[in-house]
Image (cartoon, rainbow, N blue to C red; front, side):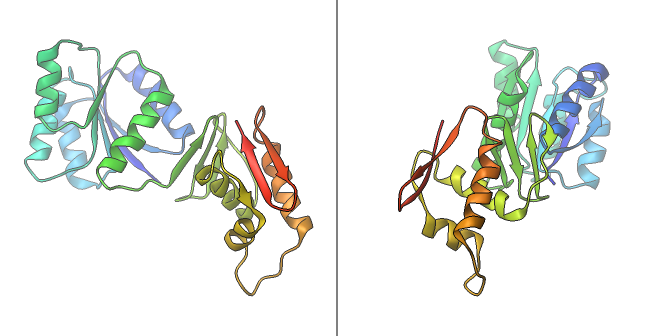
Length: 218
């Protein structure tokens, strides 16, 4: 599971943010001052740092600067109310990868997390297809924040459609992805997994292309 260290001294805002991030499949540790942030960062390997700037004891910019001096390259995003160029410049000079100004949309934060992770070479194995999120590291699939119970082959088919969104997914591609060479498959089992995904996609539809395969229109 992807681990985030959140530095935020507004506890009410932090609780709301943690709930939203955990619904997306993240695990979040929270601290409310810069010194606690450093202690936590030194004792645990996190995948992402989310930092407010104006926090007690040691502000977010100074905290991240100290972390970077230890050659810790964990992706970091500032979540701040500051909008002036000087503060934001200092934030980037301290080693941040991105920033969001408050208030922000949780979906935008989620996309920023994935983007900075990719730039840093980290792979989070998290796929978001509008309101559906699949985390292959812990095998959980969420829709509108609620866990969906379905089999592993249906999840692999979801990944296959995501990887080829807008393109035709042939039956041969599905068979190769879902079954090993010594496993038997049937047309009926393919249709079962297709039907499972169709029920998840709401407005989107999976179209059958005769004698070829399927395509997701969205």
